[in-house]
Each structure stands twice: as structure tokens, then as C-alpha cells.
Length: 235
Image (tube, rainbow, N blue to C red; front, side):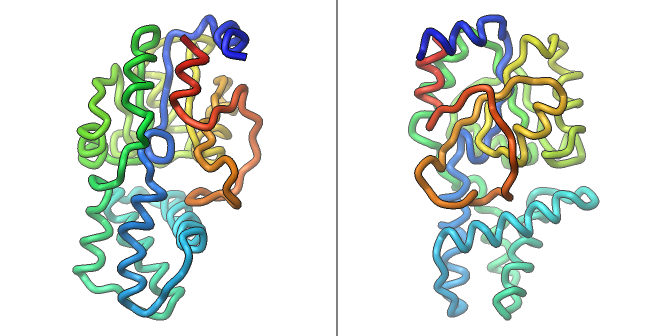
């Protein structure tokens, strides 16, 4: 299996990689930040419910006029709170919108990226902004060759614009680029629309539903449960 995967992607020289959901455990981070706010307001709901509510509101906001990711988080909380019948205060909004720097790294992310850097140039295409990615990258501890944020693109994936910005900056033929991501909705659908091959890091394997992302249909070129197994197959 590993040799087959390496052979399948033998011509690749650049990996474009999603961050939140793929390298950073944003579902755990969202639940750890949002859960206490809801419980303090008398709403004890499960993680899956929380994540589905977040996915619905975040994706709708990101599809509209550009807002900073901090504003996206604040408005997502306002909408979730509205669904549940309360209005969040400034302390709650500030706590949730500044929580990204505390979202944990998946345990395998750093070592997998270090290994992959031996063969590939690594480029980030993230829906975070410059500030939040910098905080997350302190946890990752990796120097990427390119970093393309939603703030720089002034749009959010699944907009094709984010990928156009990235491709213009990387200046490598698409046939040599492999996109690596967890979200079918945010990443695989648009990447494949532009002719990129994709690898699904299915962090939710064995879990019900789609978590913090809307449902989407895509057929990735390969699937792995984590970055470690992907790196082992590629090297």
C-alpha cells in the first residue's frame, strides 16, 4: 500500500496543506472554548451538536462579504446563542474569538511535517488569518515555504480564489502539486475543481456525521486517518 501511494504521487514536488482540522484539532478547540459558554448559560449539548451548529453558521458567514476570522468566530457564537435563546456578552465573545491560539495540535502533525519536508516543499492554505496562523504555527514548529491565509486572499475556502492565490504564489505546475486536507467541503471540492489531486486526512474516521464542516461529496485520490500514516506512505 505504501509503495503504491508513493508511486501514485511520484511526480509531486509541493504539498499544499490545510491547517484547522488537518494539523490543528479545531474540533477539540471549538468544543473546549464553546462548551463552557453554553453550559454557563444553561445549555448542556453534546460535542456533535455543537460542531454541527458551528459548521452551519461559520460556512454561511464565510460565504458572505469578507470578515476577519475573529469576526467570524464572534458572529458564529452570536448565531448559536440566538438559536438557543440568549445573547452572548462581550467577555464570552472575546473569549471565543481569541481561542484559536489555544486549539491543540494533533500529536502526529509536527513529526509528519518534518518528515515530509525532506521530499516536498510545504505550503499552507488556511482559512485562518495571519495572526491566528502565527499562533498555531508556534505549536506546530514548522517553517513553511508558503503561507496563504484567508486574510491575504480576502476570501474563505471553498472559494476558488484562495486556491488561485496559492497557485499564483507557488508558481509550480498543478500536476506537481498535491493538496492535503481533512474537509471535503472546504478543500477537496474546490481543489479538484481546479485539477489538483487530493489526499483526505480523515481525522473523523469512525465518528458519525461531518463534525465542524458541512456535508460535501468528493472522491479524494487517497485517504489516511492521520498525517503520520500519510507521511509513512509517501516517504
